[in-house]
Length: 61
Image (cartoon, rainbow, N blue to C red; front, side, top):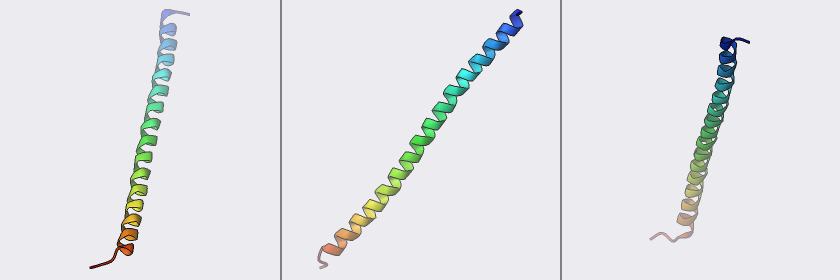
């Protein structure tokens, strides 16, 4: 093998490692974003439910 082939093989391996790391990072960021969105939706629903429960049980004056 000549020097150019070795450099090409090393370049391919390095690019695969970098791509693997980037894809893992992107998937982790997307999972975190989806988790935050779901938590916000559930928190909103719980807030609305508690507010309606508390206004129904308290006497109006």
